[in-house]
Each structure stands twice: as C-alpha cells, then as structure tokens.
Image (cartoon, rainbow, N blue to C red; front, side):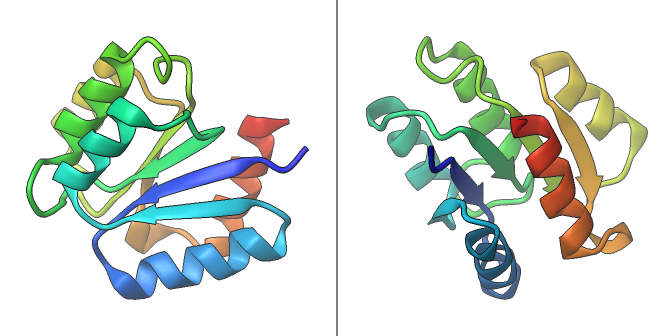
Length: 123
C-alpha cells in the first residue's frame, strides 16, 4: 500500500527537495505551505500516514497545527515529525508534551537521513 506523507513547510526549496526524495522512495506526498491551510486540511481531509511539520509557518504556527492534529479524532494517532530550525530545549519539550514522533533540526541533517527516519516510523 502506498503511504502518504503530508509536508507542512513554507520553504519552497525544502518542500521540493523532500517531495522528490520521498516520491522516489514510493511515497505519495502532499504539501501545504501555510498554517491556516494546514488547519483546514486537517479538519476535512483523510489523515496522512505521517506528517512532517515545520514550526515557523505563515498564518498559524506549527505548534498550533500540531495541537490541532492531536485534538482531531481522525488525526490524533498520526505520527508527526517536527522539522525545524528551532533547536531550543523549550521548543523541543513543548512539542514532546503535545505529542510527536521525532524532532529534527533542519540544518543538522541530510534529506536521506530524514527519509530513513520516515521509513522507520512507518514500518
């Protein structure tokens, strides 16, 4: 079965790079580049198999999107990987308290490593 990854990220370059790499690995990829759009998607769409979420988004923050995912009955068990440049301990802790599967600091990791983590979380 083809797994769907939802990428919520406002950096076009990052979105394209991850989309290409994940699609090459056989995943379907949906992309959303805005927090408000992400919230409306979560309210009405079928859950993705995994969400990659940036914290710094236009509109509504990734923290708010994450909270909405965890409150939504259909989405609350969906694995969420935070991928952000925010590396402060309080940001990581806040996300862990809301409920995440992994926290990745963008500048510290290769795309291929993220793909491996995604595959591990979905296996």
